[in-house]
Image 1 (cartoon, rainbow, N blue to C red):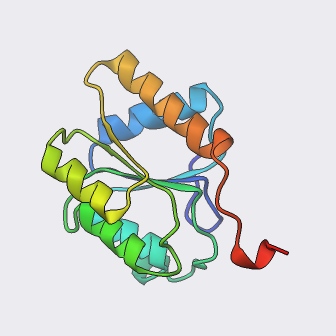
Image 2 (image 1 turned 90 degrees about the vertical axis):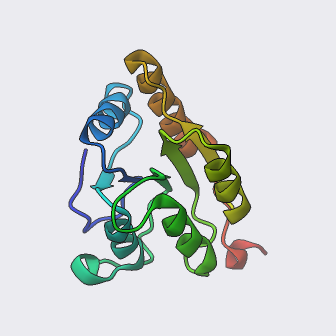
Length: 155
């Protein structure tokens, strides 16, 4: 289900390619992996969503997604800069971020890992492989991965 950004979401998907967005959502829905996903089409909007500014000022930063899927090459602000800002803000620095991108350039992957990306996945060109990659990503980050507990939860 795609939501309007008012409620907490499982996944924030930031990608400027409508075909890739559709394929990703279709894979999640087919396998019933995600309850809610919010899509943004550029890095500027991703930052607005995450940090609750401009068109997302009504949101609470406490309602972070469970995982962010970022494309490297996006208009206005690229995915690497979005990742940099996520990692430098104490409110979001532990948010799981997966680069799901068509960029297979080593320098992009190295920079993302140096900035603390959780995973760097090159989008498969083949439809079935792309579908399977999206399914695995959703399953891992939403069901298998145990998020770090809050410090105040430790007794």
